[in-house]
Image 1: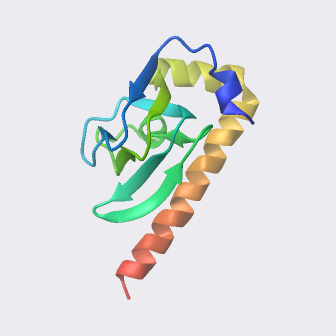
Image 2: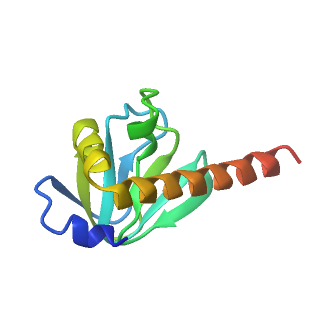
Amino acid sequence: MKLQEMFHDWEDVEKHRANTVIFAERDPADVMYVVLSGEVELTLGSEPLGIEGKGGMIGEMAMIYPAGTRSATATTLSKVKLARLNRDQFRSLVDENTDFALHVMGVLANRLIVANSFIAQLSK
């Protein structure tokens, strides 16, 4: 699924310069983002979890599990353009688009794999 095509005319867009923190661990969590251009690094503490580029998602856990706070920090590595989705917009897309819903599930599954690897390394 090419999310950048799905969101090419999205009205709620944010632009950030390189080395900007989009959200930090423990920040309030009420939106998610689709990366339309640029790269964003996700970190937990000072440990890198991964990099999301064009078509990637960040902050999606807040849409599924509304714990109220972010579980990681997202920092731009370059100039970025992001489509911003609130919980209502996310739920509408999941209801209307099975491919989008399955894509989000795949992203979440990958995040769990990375988190499990991170925890396993810490316990050594």
